[in-house]
Each structure stands twice: as C-alpha cells, then as structure tokens.
Length: 322
Image: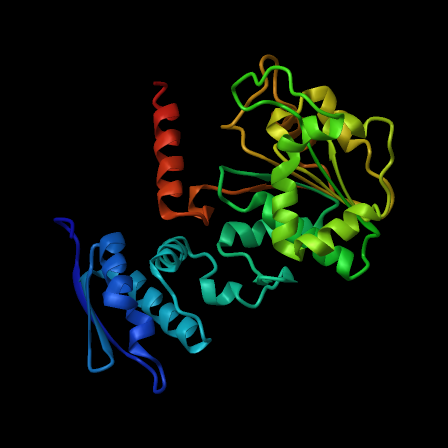
C-alpha cells in the first residue's frame, strides 16, 4: 500500500452453489496470485472472500473475485494465469475472461477456440470486419493460431473455398548452409509451424486430406508471385521477414471473395539487410478502408506467464537503448 493510499476492505459472499475450492484454486493459489498482483490481502472463510488494501486495488480485486466466481459457475476451473488476465482486464477496463467465453471463433477437435484477452478479441473482430488485417505483436499472443482458427471456421461455413497459408523462407539469425533433399524437403522446416497449428485445430488426418485435395495450401511466400487468389482465406505469417517488394507482391494477390491476415512481430526481424515490408506496409496502408491494424502486447501473451515477463524485459531493454 502506498503512503497516500486510502485503506479499504470488502467482503464478497459467494452465491449459493459456488464451489469455493474452484474460486480459490488448489492451495489458495488464485488468492495468492491476486495478492501478488494487486498488493491486497485476500482470504476465504465461511464461503466469504475478505479483501483488504488500497481502495482502488480492492475494487479491482473484487472484480476479479466476481470473475472467478462466474467462471467457476460456468464449469471452468480458473487458475493463476486466468487471474493475471482478469487483473489486467479489471485495471484496463477491458473484457473479462467470462465475457470472452461467449465468442467461439472455431469449434475444433481440441474444444472451442476463443479469444483469451481483450487484445485478442479486438484482433478477431478486426479480421471478421475487414478484408485485410495486420495482426502485430510479440511471440505468444496467438496471432497465427487465431487467424488459422478463423480461417478454418470460414472454410467450414463455406464463406471461402480454400485456405492459403504462407511464410517467408528466412533463417532465424543463423545460416543453415546447404540443405539436402527435394525443394519441398528444403522448405518444410520453415513452414512446419503452420502445419503444427493446422493439425492442432482440425487434426492431422483431416488436415492431410485437405492439403492433398488442394483445399488447404501451405506455400513459401516466394511462390506466390503471379497468382490471383479468389474465394480464399489467406494468412501470411512471420511477415516482418518479408521485404517491401514481397509484401507488395503478396497484398496484390488478393482476389474477389477473399480475406487476408498478415501477422508479424517487428522485434523478431531476421532479414539480413534492408527494411521490413511489414513496417513499410503500415506506413503506406494505415487508415485505408477495409484494412485494419490490430496491436497485441505482452498483456495478450497466453503462453507460460514467464513469456510475458520476458517480452516486457526485452521491451524495456530496447527502450533504454542498451
């Protein structure tokens, strides 16, 4: 509590039928995480949560406890990572996790795919409401996975006739030298993450069937020249590694009835020399109708909680010019 903070306390009695163990988490982990994030004291007794601390922090903590209760009553078992997202939403006035559960992007083989943060929700809405959407943000924010979930949903609803997935073939900061094998075998390591995401969404057997029939095409960016892609959902991944010429070439492949999503992270730039086509595209296209730029941040990282802290640490380091 800061020196000038106003002390406050609040008690929240759980609604009948709420499982206190789900709200608190195993070993009260959810309450301990809430305390660490907001600097409050939280305890459960007789199905009542008591909160003490700075007035603003107690108000935010009360929102999070209500959120944990709502999620537990929906059948979820919220954990510390969800507490972190709820705290961020409570502080920023964004979507709470329970509000995001109603937005199912795709009902896949591993369950429903939903946005998990307000930033992901804004990104998904941008994709649904625009012809071309740029999803920009650090690793772990779900840029590619959510785009592919939306592509799979569009294909399932027959809004498009095929999905085209592409990436620049650029080595990540190291030279691999000569690679043996066929052309397909040479480029496979670069586009393997796209296969992995597709398999996770729709299953390996179904994915291979769609690839074999040409309904899903996974291709290096360099192979896109000269094509016009109509009736397609097209995803360009790792776009920070596209040159300005490649980016212009890609964007002008757009055909009738198609939608494009371009994802990238400007902090993971692997082009040996020259500017990034992703950064130039933003300067050229921002503000154009039917084109959206959706920003994701460290608050939208949905991997291990340490990933978001790593992203923030690197951002601070780079801002300091070290």
